[in-house]
Length: 327
Image (cartoon, rainbow, N blue to C red; front, side, top):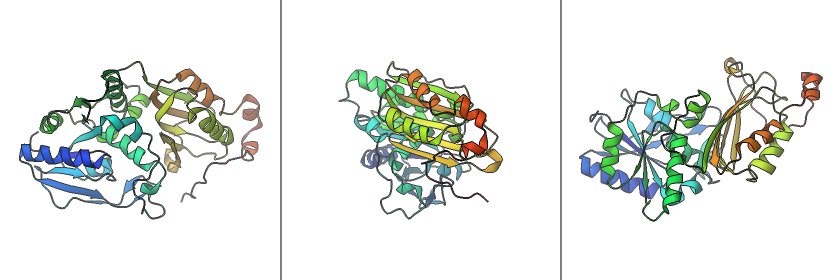
């Protein structure tokens, strides 16, 4: 395992750079800068990345906007991923409404509202080791909550309070990497009924929301804005899954939310029948899970609306952004 590449990720660039430099120097690995190419909302994948050369013994300092799944998939032997989290700012990072790239061209999802928060979540969810830095000044109860939150977002990751970065890298190299990076996320494991975080805290909750009926889009927007985003039932930090809108029949959408940002993107036609209704994994702090579920249930079609049928559904108000026509 010592011969596999190592990638250091994280949205806090100064902390990530310092961590990577110290780990590379101690381990005698060549430090390589890796950055990504353009990404597009329709696929959530970059066109490519440039790593400035590299080898199996390289330690990659991954740019803030690098897609970890695409990067990992570019290697014959996938790298061990270490996500560096600045402990005092973890929750703030997951609620950050800023873009990843202010100069992103139209159609590049790095320019989306909340793209930085989505990247923070993606780095956590893909990591083999999650290394907290600057944790010494964080109050003990809050630190325990942050570690549990990381464990809920990625139950397979080893959670460490960093003292020496090279020890965190060695822990990553010793970690079982057989589970594909894309299947490590807490939301995936929750939808697969395998969500088993090693660390828990009374303030951190992950639950699965299911609803067979499609959403009325206008009521869904109201539920999101007036109840969930307004934090009436606690702070929903991350929710991902699949949903259907009554006005967009025969189309399954990928639901993704982090902080105040929300994406509903259509999936390919061949995936349209892989999910009957709504299946969404929700993670948050101080959540009243039952109330969050009821708010979403209220956005689903009523008995009367269901009886009215698809021809009536098409006339419902739909304030959500339109989807591109699929080929």
